[in-house]
Image (cartoon, rainbow over the protein chains, first blue to last red):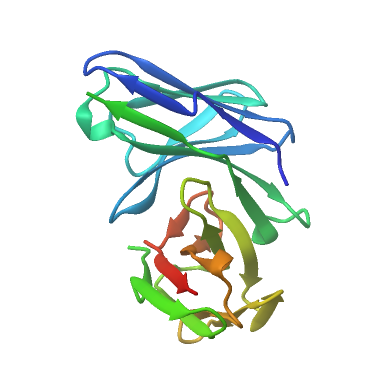
Length: 117
Length: 112
């Protein structure tokens, strides 16, 4: 299994405060993703990265920013947390098991539970 | 718009019974389809990954099928165990895109 850790694992914060979630990988994979998971919606992509300093928006990127200054770390920042951002956040990484994108497998971290009061 | 629909939304079965979960997709062009298992409070874990040329793939008691013509996939679980209780998520990836399309999952509960 790919080594992916997320920190913190749980966080309670207040509306209007900035929050940063960290994803760390030990596998040197090129692609990293941030998702949120909410009841009735499944997993939704917030932002993704295809290399150091190379990032792009997903389908629910408003209110979020990301940074990737090193291959192993992908940070997600809630610039000013709102109650609608209460969710479970998952980081994922992907590799190409056969050297082509067709066979790529995505591995997920354990998740961060965020509660915005 | 790329979409992945899963059915049923939830399913309750008795331990030892078989079950089949369905996934229909409209993702184009198709690259691969994956089934994930997500235990409560944990991240999804990949069960199978299938490409266009693969019709069936097994992983222990889990067997996935793919019909690329009708854009349908199924996940068959044989001789269910209590540990199979989880959410099963179908994910389809479009060729040339970094972004997969996720289904909302099927919640499976296995009762003793």
